[in-house]
Picture 1 (tube, rainbow, N blue to C red):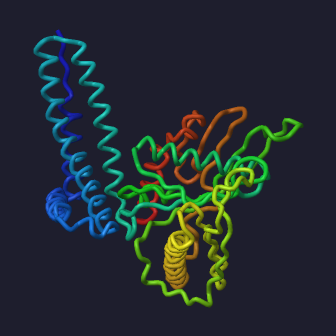
Picture 2 (picture 1 turned 90 degrees about the vertical axis):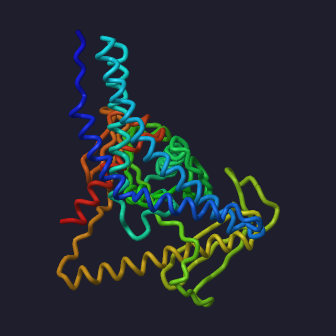
Picture 3 (picture 1 turned 135 degrees about the vertical axis):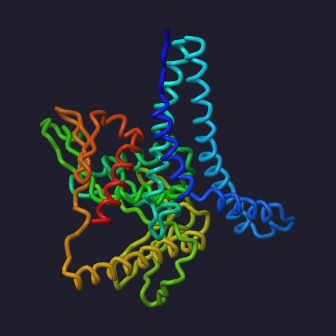
Length: 369
């Protein structure tokens, strides 16, 4: 006779789930949803399109967050019922379904638990990711494009909207750089652990000697800020260049000089935008990203000064944070957390959740040390 007992596992999940509900603050979510629903129902809402989009987006995000949390509670209740039915009917198929649901809920609750670890000042914001090719010639520019596709596939799998803001194509393969926005709650807190230098080792498809080639690409992740008003940039500190947007191989995609490149002269920070419809829109988008980068730079310098005064000047992030091996032993390994995958193809296709979760837990431990 079937004796399926998952009570201890379910109780452990309920304890973690209770902690998550407390941290997420379900009642505050409901209050926000009620307020935003009232705003969204105002007859004059769409008189201000930008504000309307912010209200409806915030409402949608909070409704999704509440549905996700509440849905887990319902599934835990249903799981207990399923276990009871499996035992009562002596049904192995129902027992197998219950075990599968337990595994699925365990993974889902673990993911939500990781989100509760994100309590940084900007963690709940959407993210702007910039990828730049490094040393390694065509292999490096090809690697940069592989990384871009990896993050876009990750966003697609999670149903997060993506907006490509700028792409600079290499003369040979791949891209020199790309900047894109991932719009989702906690996208910055989630993806900020991906920032750093990524290393690829493989037999180069661009060489004739079948030699192993090592190449590098840098990933930068910053939060999306609606207005970085804390940073005042004098006009004299910025050089503005306008140029014609272009696609792969120099093919023109715009017949006017609508693309904009801003150079912050004191720091050398360069921001390019070409995917908006007008020069004015591209300049506004570029200015917002520049202000954000300068704000973060200012905070990093303040934090570094505090560490120096405290006698601790050890960097918390190494220059190389992850290696991708595509020859011999197929392997992707994070050098900070030790998390690894023997399936690089899946990783490059967006299977990043394990690396991201490990990175967030690692960061939290470092903060607590």
